[in-house]
Length: 203
Image 1 (cartoon, rainbow, N blue to C red):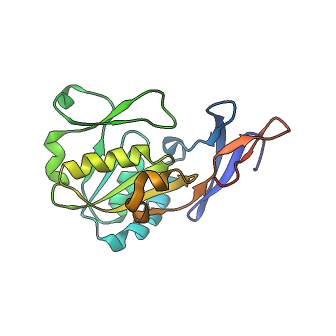
Image 2 (image 1 turned 30 degrees about the vertical axis):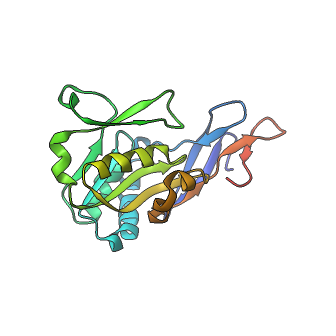
């Protein structure tokens, strides 16, 4: 801990001070918001993550709106590719007939749906795809995204994240957990006797 209410984490060669945000009385997370970290930070992180994913020889990068978009852009750029696909969460007018997959996220309430624009399916069908995101926590969002991409014909060859959080994502992803490459890891947090938060043993 660097200060009350924050947690310092290494993200590859860089560091970030993340606010600790309670989810319940007994559980808190260190919240990463890629849109608040700056262009330079995400560009460096994207390039470093791309180096970890490059051996899988991806032909396209996919991610989830909204916080995964900057990661997808920078990883795509660093891999020397020019196309990426974003799974949406808002049913905009052009997504009325989109492929859908239900998902529950640790940072959102209730069930959402990931949406894949049918017009973008050719971007991943029959191609080697790297799925990237900002943080993989419970693995629920990642697993839902992989199901949606595979149903569209994608060959998932790599999974990348700026950070993994705890260990719940491993059983959620099953055999796919071995594809995960990340620049760092953060724990979950539990209350400490002084009224603050401390890393939970075992993540």
